[in-house]
Amino acid sequence: MAFEEGLAKSEKAYQQFTEISAAFADILKNDFITTWQWWFGLALFIIPWLVWFKYRKKDSTGRLLLAGLLSIILSLTIDLAALSLGLWSYPMIIIPLAPFLFLPYHFSLAPVGIMFALQIKPQMNSLLKGILFSAIAAFGGMNFFNAIDFYNPKSWSTLYDFVIFLTLYYAGYWITKMESLQGLDKIKSEGE
Image (tube, rainbow, N blue to C red):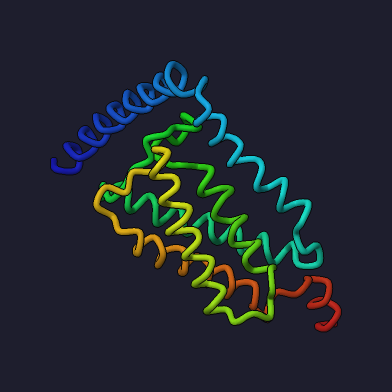
């Protein structure tokens, strides 16, 4: 009996979520889409990838993209957990498909920033570079987004953002240093 009640409550919650998503879509259409903030958010989604594509280290593209993909997965996971706990929010809606997430951060700014940080001065001390990247991202970027109302940290400390960015950077750093990242054709020719 409890399972059926749970299913009914779950369906009711999904219905409420659908109504909330429709409200966010309405806010986007009627209040945000004509503002400079919305266009700036859209530019933050597209321009970093264009810049990265032009200035990426071409012989490391695969490794860097893998680091970017890992940062997308980890940042989304962290964000979904924090949002569900009400630790922070994103008042600015860029795309109504995911109104609770600031997608330019997850799909553009974080991965491209990490990929650039990894490719610039690759011989530099990784701890120093990770600290530098995390400080710029957390204390510069997140405070900037708070100031323009893209991010509401509530009572979340910027120091925690620093730790998150450092974790994302080191996850990307770790994956680019994996020895097992060689081409399948090399593995096959060695095994023959």
